Length: 574
Image (cartoon, rainbow, N blue to C red; front, top):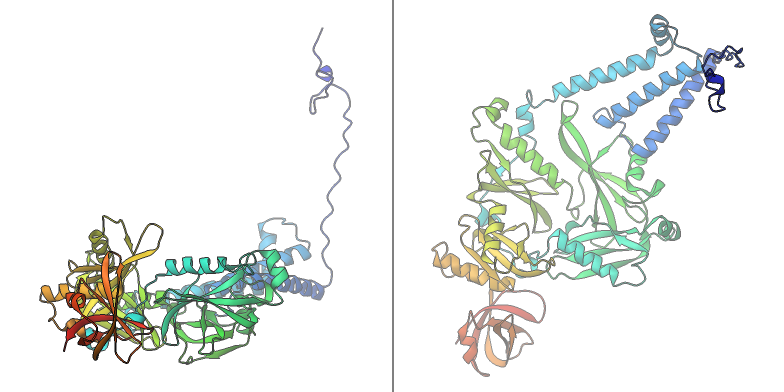
């Protein structure tokens, strides 16, 4: 029996010629797309669609309407493309050959086409005009740097001013504090952007809250965020500052209360750096939003020109070319480091940075903050481009004024000092925080907190910048400093009286002596007659404290501070 395709398993194979006449109907010809007949109506339709698309893009992406912003060119080119695509659709064009296509483009899309070409050309010319190859000296001049004397210009600070926490430790304390509050822990979370500021003479980190999820936002948004966190970097105390009226404008808000959107709609042409939270002396939270400008060519030479201050509660915003004195974070630390790298690389010209490399220097891998006076200064080391493990000095830059000082001091890099401190306590497997730069006994000194695996601060370390084999550790800052000054004296770096710098004395008869064993060491607490103050003296450092009796007349040298117990440096019989 002959095989027939029409009988194959009861299925009809499409396309198999069985000799039967085809039952398929011929496809209907497609109707050409109708064009909008009125030219004016076409133009208005194209413009309306382009504006609608542009508004949506602007609302979500928030580009600055500024020729110095790269995002503006993306926005403008997108609008040109939308207009041309819309014009193709409304004109009924069906693409009948390349000649007809280009004729259409010339007739219908002439303005957006040439606008796009002009923008691309402007961007290319502006990029070349701001190239570091041609403008190396201009880049080097972005950050004026003066030479300074560290010992005379950087004051020694007391124990109650030395920050003990790094950002990671502050985050853990902040999260723990919020977890203790039953009325907040289920509704809010802490934003992990902890900004360091000076508040009422104290180095603190400030953190805002955010809604735990979108549902919590819907249920709580009318009242706003009820508080912010202040973490004292010295005492490690965490304060939840509750507000009478909640914070309604943050960088994690939604819709019109989103800080970036609020800024863009109020200042559509301004370019901004990342906003940071600060509080004024009355405790009112503000967002500090540095205004960025390009000073070299069209896109080069990024710098700061004033800032917009946004009241985080009311949303009221105002631009200041000179910010109020309580503002600490005007110049971002990353921008300062970048500008110094320009200075270090190009102050002798572009070619020298590649070939001769005479006096070429760059910053080290990281930076930290130092509280001096009522300002916050950025600290970072400076090294040569050879990739060695030593610094040739370091810079301090005021984040509010951009005043910058270079201090020549050959020594170890920050990471070498961290490794040296960790080696001193390697049996405990502690890790060192990125160091602070302090003046201790007139010497540039790296100060680090030593943390265990649970990220809890257990000890402190001081490492001499110039001689990083001089390492002292202690359970308290006072103990650490006393050991460090003793090592400096033993190595002939300072004289024996350096440890008394910044101290005060008290004289009188011993009215009361108490003792306690702290971390394996006996500490004596001495109160003089007529005073409620106790002075703590370690028996390891001052053996005379062991044989003192009530009624003995003594002179106690101590470091001033707050509280009813002060750190004693030494005690002597009169």
